[in-house]
Every structure is written in C-alpha cells, then in structure tokens.
Length: 112
Length: 115
Image (cartoon, rainbow over all chains, first blue to last red; front, side):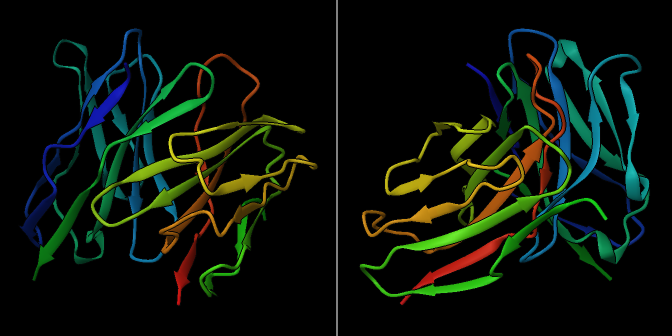
C-alpha cells in the first residue's frame, strides 16, 4: 500500500541555518513525489515535484529535494532558512488513478 | 488569472444543519478533490471526482456528499450526520485523464466551525 512518512512533527532552526525535512514513501513503482508548503489558514502551495530524470530537483523559494530510490526518500533542503519559511510542510506521493497520499506534515519554526 | 476559489473562507454551522462549501476552478482540470485537515493529522481525502457526473468516496466520506455537474465546480455538503465537522476543508484539482497522478493545486480553504 502507498504511504508517506514524515518522521519529524516539528523542527526548530535558527534563521540563516540550513534545513532538511525528511520524507519517506512506500510505493511499488517509480513514484511521483511532491513537496507542498502551507502557511497558517492558507491552502497548500507546490514547492517542487519529481517525476523522472535528475534526482536533484530545484523548486521555488530556494528549496531543493533529492530523490533516493535506495532509501525510499525525498528529503527537502534549503541552505539558509529565512524567517518567512516558517510554515507547515507536506510531502506527497502521486499514485495510479490520480490518487495522492500525504504525510502528516512537519511544522517549521524559525528562530531569529 | 487561473486558480481555485473556495467560499466562504469562514463558515459557522449550528448542530443539525447541513452546509455547502463551494469550490470552483478555471484551470480546465478534469479531477477535483476534497480534503479535511485537522491539527496533527495531515490531509484526509473525503471525496474525489475524475470527470463530470462521476465521483468516488475517499477515506472519510461518511457524513459528507458531493456533486459534479460541471467541470469547474465540485461543491461539498457537510450533513448533520457528520458528528465532528469542525475542521479546515481544502479543495484541490489536477489535470487527471491519465493513469498517474499529476500535480494537485489547492484552493485557499474553508474553515468550518460548529457552534
């Protein structure tokens, strides 16, 4: 069965520090993978996606993610976090039949 | 400007009442989705529709109903049978029409509170 796990419920980083948010998936075939960001009271905004090709994917707002098939992971990274990056982050996998499976999210707090 | 609109942004309901949440998209997407979001539980799928006049139950469809009479519209009704409807509701759409899931785009959400 398809599933997505985000092991970290909450992460706190200092402004300017690097960030890595973890995502592990379970899917039988080559997955379609997504990272979304959600500010409080808002909808989800797509940060980046991986369908095929280069396993290092660049997204908006300076984020990138790396697909590692051997580890079933799609971790999100940013080299220098800004206070405006404080939000909830969701990893998702797209499946056959236009189904999507979301992780439970990681809440990011940025300390000045 | 293409996108997904949801209305209202905030909705208050008395116990025993049915309420309908609106979702409209002008992206020409075939597939539309409704999710419920509660703190610490991520997104849970309520209903989805791959094409006009067709829809399927998601993981938590009990107490909800939908219709898909037009491609651009996918309203969600929260019925009195839904025992705990207070939540944040998100509508999404994707191109659909293929075997694999393409990118989902989300609306701004509706926060429903039962008084």
